[in-house]
Length: 413
Ligand SMILES: [Zn+2]
Image 1 (tube, helix red, strand yellow):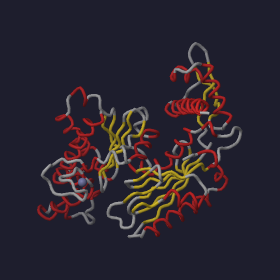
Image 2 (cartoon, rainbow, N blue to C red):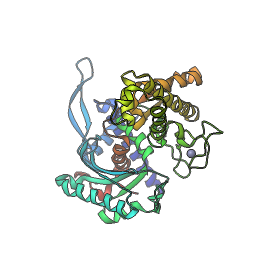
Image 3 (cartoon, rainbow, N blue to C red):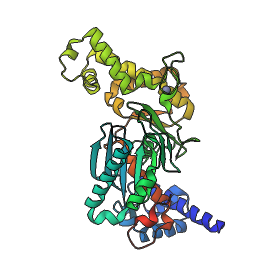
């Protein structure tokens, strides 16, 4: 039996590999798939036939292959299946329906105003119920529910272990609760981890195998892709770069460590620094700004306001120290920065790159691309849907042929 299992695993891996190639390249034929994957033409034909039979791939016209030769173009059927994605953030819940291409079909959001654990779970259930009800004929092709949440999480058990500063969130089996309510396979993953997945599948990290996504928001965390796989660590809390020390004698952080990165470069730290500057320097342009939130200060910086620029530069320099540590720890080929602080844009990115240029050896820094996220949908939301599609793609052998993919055979936990 074990051997059969291994054969299926190998077939699934190859199916997934072909789908990845089709996802990353717009126009491919069977021959292209064989050349890129290294699989034999006969093997590719067999696997493609399986994908077509399952409705996941279809033939779409012809592609020119030089000297008058033409080949049949293969495409992933973007409507073969849908995923329901939940982003559970500290202050809101978002729910969306995604297709295979990561396009958002519908979405809804609800704020959490100091909601209890039960109230939050009720909000999540309500949004899912509403989305399912409104999904119409697509309902039968929803293959799973993906939840992205702040951690630490016990993903294998489907539990939220703890959410700091949120009383009651300890050892909550969110996956069981949602799965038993809706009868749809449900997955949970750390928000930074699904974000790196979203960037890898649909963002700037498409061709990257060693990718780090840094979420620089109220906290600072990273999703790390090593050789194409998410690096989770022993307890799934790897990538907590916000709690690495950049000032060993600095103030004590909530985590118990001192001088943690996020105490210097999170959006909360930026707002605090901005408030201090507003009070001490009272810059004229700032006084004229009615709602002096961090985005207003980013705008002032982009417009050339010196005080605002200096503040953005300082925040970028601190973040740069974190990026240097990430480069030296993980040796990624690409780092993508997102979340609230990334809205500061180019001046912030330039400050980060400046620190990297000063502090990383040229051989290493020249081979590391540093970019701002450009996804239209926030990665931690898109990634919740991506998680489900990815898991379904990894288990394609289990799908029955000649009918739309359904939840019962798609996502296995
Ligand atoms: Zn800390």
